[in-house]
Length: 387
Image (tube, rainbow, N blue to C red; front, side, top):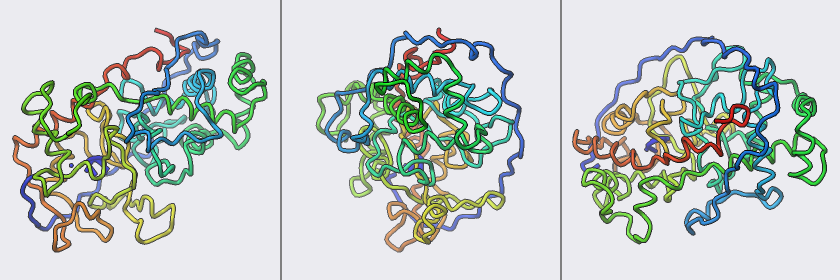
């Protein structure tokens, strides 16, 4: 729900909240960068590859979404990584998957709305990709319109704003690049290029993007009680950790009831009480299911690397984590499908009323969730522009 608590307390009370002002967004943003000649040439195929994390703690292993028909292999990751960065797979050769999911931003987009191949902006803020494999529900995008990760990775290619290809055009574009034949053969046994195989390779690469080596993760090793102070963290970071992880009954804010396990992922979508923006109506999951009970619910990405992956919420309305915490502190709106975790006993929206000290502690804790290595590791970088 920090991304939903994002989309995070000690004393809770209820109070009315004013409707949020409309936030206008331009119809057209700055154009995509000019064509880069490096994408016309063969990528660094022999570059070292990300390694699929195999030592997964049991609570995380239970959330793993690797399907039986798409096991992750080194050859599949290699192919998926190259497809992920290949700008020629957009209508005018100016954008790739990485344009909206930048490594340095935790594989998120640092702009409020992503910029498509013609400079038009997307409807929602992009989602960070780290830890996407930990999703037992198996549905993707903020509105859960994709039934699998394999489905999700294909949709941007034919989106009229994002990459602009016509149906069926993706395979022809891939086949026109001479290096892809042997990459498909290495990954799938023969050089046949199909959309299904492309989606499987892309999904394999995305599943290799895991953030499991943050300061929090290192400090967590060998400690069965997450609520106890970690000697490796400061007193402020430990205070923020307690607020985030402990339930309200335990004296915390209960943020971990929505952002679960040490991957800090959202298992179920939630309505986190964001006031509606007049000029940007959005029913989230309700638009996918058509159900009243799903209106206003959204899926949030893992909170790992959250300090580098703003702006925040499905519509990017909050530029800083301070603004996010202020929302949970005193801005939760009463809505029909508001998450139970954000309601008081009388059904009204909670007011956590965080002190300035606790707000700073929460942010200090969130900073411990940054996996610095993931942000700079060349194995996840652009093979067309090797470092």
